[in-house]
Length: 363
Ligand SMILES: Cc1ncc(COP(=O)(O)O)c(C=O)c1O
Image (cartoon, rainbow, N blue to C red; front, side):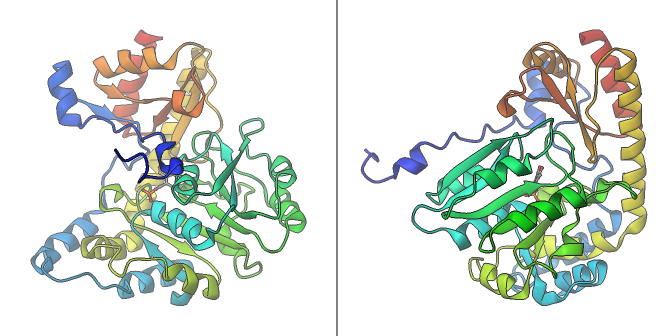
C-alpha cells in the first residue's frame, strides 16, 4: 500500500542488518563468557572520568541539552587548537556524514566514495535521492586517480576515510596534495578520521587539521566512539571552514546531541591517561595478531587503526560462526565483498590471546 507513497530511492535501500544483543547470544549459544571484537570499540570502556561526570549529571535529565554544545566545543577547541566557530557537533560522526550530504543535496547530485569503505556514506546519499559513484580500492587503498576520473559537473562531495575501514590503510601527504590540485574548486572533500588517533607518529599521512584552513574544500570528521570509548552515547564532530560550519549547522536539529554525551565528551577528550593506555594496548595487540597470524601463514593487512583485516583463504562466515560458538565475536566481511576476510577489533591482551586460541582451532 505504500508503493505510491514511498519513493523508489528509499525502497532500493538495503536495510542495515542489526547484530543480535549479546544477552541473546549468551542464551542461544549457551555461553557464559563472550568477548566482542567486531565493532572497533574501546575494550577498556569509557574514561572513568567521563562515567563519573555522567553519574553526577543524571539528575538534570529533565532539562533539554545545550543546543550549542558550549562546553564540549570549548574542550574540542582547546584539544585541537581550532575555533569554536569551526566545529559542528553530531550524534555520532555518522550524523556529520548525514549533514554534509543533506547540505549539498540537489536534483541529480553525485557523491563519490570508495568500496570497500565505511558503508554509511552511500546510504545517506541514497536517502537524499543522490547518485552514488563508488570507486574500488586499489591495492587496499583509495584510488585517488580513479576518483578524479569520475568527477563530473554534478559531483558535490567526495568521502575518503583515512584511515580506511576496513583495510586500515592511509594515503600519503604527497598523493593527497596532488589529488587536491587536480580536483575542481566546487567540490567538498570529507576526510573521515574516525581512527586517526590510532595512527602512529611518523606515519606519512594527511591530517585534516593541517589542511582545512588552507583549503576550504576540506573538512574532517572525528568520533568519540573509538579511542574515547563512548560509542553508546553517539558523539562525533566535524571541523571545517567557518562559513561551511555555519551552513552545516543549519541542517542540524537544535538538540541533536544529548546532555550526557556532551558532558562525557568534555571529560573524555581531556583524559590523556586513558587515551595513552588505549593506544598502547591497541598497538601491542596489532603486533601480537600480526606475529601470531603470520606464524600460521596468514597475512594481516598493515593497519593504522584499532582493527586488523585478515585474508583467511576460506569462507569467512563459517569461521565467524565457529568463533561465535567459542564466545568470540569477530566480523565476517562479506558485506564488503571480502568473502574470505575477517576483521578483528583489538581487545585487551587476554581477549586477543583467547581470540587467537580460537582461531588456531577453527582455522
Ligand atoms: C570510518 C568510520 N567512520 C565513521 C564511523 C561512525 O562512527 P560514529 O559512531 O561516530 O557514528 C565509523 C564507525 O565504525 C567508521 O568506521
